[in-house]
Length: 305
Image (cartoon, rainbow, N blue to C red; front, side):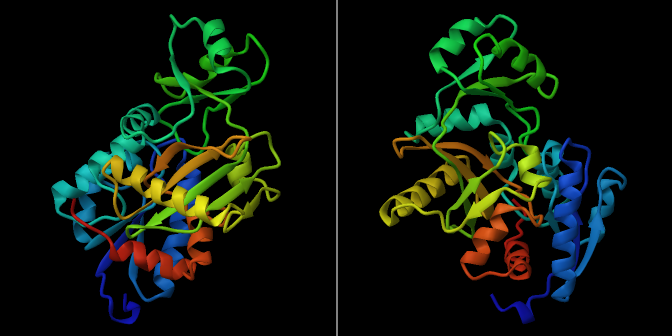
């Protein structure tokens, strides 16, 4: 891409919104906005929590830096398609599926991709039986939230019901997932290519909201110290997982490793964070792209559906 000759017109950077990830989104949007302006783009902040979506008709492109809720579940993507405005990231269907960890897992299982063993929970669940089947530790999570919001790690027998009650305050759709404790990783996807793998080493028991955004002692290793053949295999399979839900453009596929070195895909992120702690910029930097260049590359891929 010839950055100097790109004319993106007037660009709205969508940030904030009304989801539980509003503060993270504001930080992402601020970083993106500053990067685009620094490269001469006519970019402006746009918070749909305070501005009518119809006002976006005044813009030529939209950079979606919203996380969670309507910004990541296909709703804003659908609105932009109706208005005929090009936007960044995956389309309506991929965004909706990617926001739903349960439906994503169903598709990946149908494709033969490895996922951690899991169970869906509700009032009628035999919680003791689920604990016995999945073992401890296990993780209970709202199926349609991001940034680890509402996730509870269960380490003691009998703790599953209480964890479910906590998670369901964020989403009626709740899952329990077998703990896969050999390491946490992510693969950034950009323009049809899987970038270098990042290994995440939190100082907390798992990579929770605090470790992601508030602490400075989380360690990131990029490229991850994996055998080259295995890293290549995982990157190729991550790209397959990304495309399986209909995603294109840019995003992120998270995976876990067990103690035996087997990998399991965890979830897809169709509007990844772009903060100072975020993973896609780390991976892009390893691939030779500065943060500003990454933002331009993402913006250049804006589409109408």
